[in-house]
Length: 315
Image (tube, rainbow, N blue to C red; front, side, top):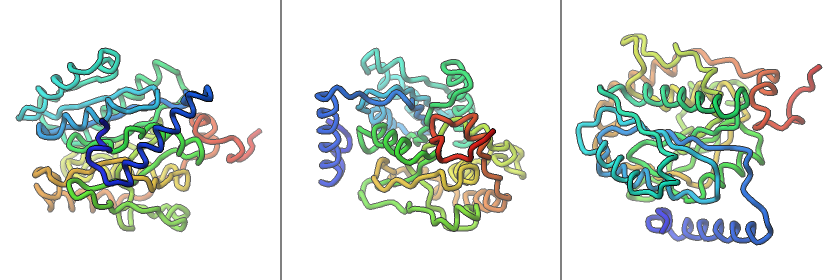
């Protein structure tokens, strides 16, 4: 039985049932899921032995027949995280098992380092599969959290196809209270000015984007000037601010909760070192905004995401 059905309120149970019925109707009418996009779920895990099984299973039970893979980085955990990752994946059906790729760090590197190198792996695989074309959507998932809805990929496909966007953010429920998260739609004036770094933080889970976008983020925007290494805290701000500046109004807020955000973990950043989290966030927010991608770049590298009639007509 799906995680969303077991844990979520009645409304979410209804949404899961409704999507299941839509799938049955599509099958009956001979319609199939669009092959337009594939998904790469990127999981960063550190000392999450109590939560990692739920996290992995929430990905493995995704429905809808989409093409996807999952990249898990164990960031030198000193508990049973590595053992449980292997146990859960080995217990899956062989067809599912081969979709998971697991990497182990010898020393703790932090979330941003792990996300960066996972994104590089995803794009390397994209190049191997489809050359220069980009049809991969990256979904960012923390190892203590979970995908809330077994039809996440269906909802994301629909959002990307209907809205011609390059990035999505929100919404989530907090665990164990199941209260709504703090994400909300960014105002048009923020998109127009590119002033994402100066306002309140709303662009949180579930965070997804066209994989090639990541290649446009300067490495300097991910490096702490004090340590000369990746920021150890506020990794979501470092990634999302830059991506939002690149795509501006080609981003989309999702009102439907697709993510379960775990507030029980005792080593959440804000609980372990709030001072360092604020320091890193302040440095990231002080960076100048990136220029948005040009129509030429969009047409050349993201034509599967952006409808042609939304772009300026070139020569």
